[in-house]
Amino acid sequence: MMLVREHWYVVLSSGEVPDGKPLGTRRLGLDLVVWRDREGQPRAAVDRCPHRWAKLSLGRIVDGCVECPFHGWRFEADGSCTSIPAHPERPISGAAALDILPLTEAHGFIWAWVGPGAPDGPPPFFDFSGYTCAGSAFTAEWPVSHTRSVENQLDFTHLPFVHRGSIGRGLPVDKEVITETDGDLIRFGSADSGIMIDFLGPSIWRLPTGPVWQFLAFVPVDEERMVYYSRSYQRMIRVPGLSWMLGKVGAVFSQRVLREDEAVVCSQPPGATRLRMGELLVPSDGPIIAYRRWREAQLVDLDEVLGLKGTES
Ligand code: FES
Ligand SMILES: [Fe+2]
Image (cartoon, rainbow, N blue to C red; front, side, top):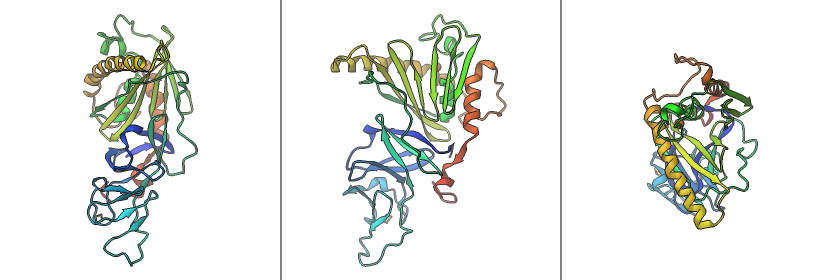
């Protein structure tokens, strides 16, 4: 799958990967097994045992190693095979290793690194200090490329149309959309309202206005499928039970708004977007044009980075 090289992508929330149990999931165009090693660190590998290609995610975790359900081969956190029960005396070939996808965990998410270079630091994140997102998290899966979902959140002039029954009620159509870029940050918004929104490529988005700030992560499943991870951050209420309830109410509202988007965005062709693909982009699409330029300048094929070309991934 084509992704932005040498960046961290959100792939899961921390709570989705328990201790002691492998998770099978599809992310970044790959079937992955994700588990926690003996230090509790998340690990991911292509979900295919090198022996006879059974799914490792159907196996179990033993002492931080993932064990294949078929013949019990065991793999360490670095992907190396440490046990072949049918041949305990034979040396184990280095070829009996898993294809590992580098992961880290931060801000309640698990992030995957797209090479080819090594990670150059932790994943950048927005400053939410003093805010809580208790109770507000939810996910929504859409049958479109993550690029379509990102662009939907970079699109200012859809608000009075798609959301005329909710957040766009009574809004004028903005005649001037501002777009500012700074490295991986695209900041955009409306000259009329003064609302400015941040997209920090490739994965995260924040609407920092009012008492409740909206946050989204865009998670690629494969070329034509993605998952939103949504949170609302607020600092009005700190009492645990009450802040959790406010988060829940925010989630219900955000889900409704996102369903309005889904109905239209999922009517677009589902594949990845490109700068020149025949769409008729106009000046108010400035943030989308900036995103496409930023993305296309640094694309890499993750299968090639991991050396998976020529195999079924
Ligand atoms: S297929 Fe995994 S141990 Fe045989
Ligand atoms: Fe929208």
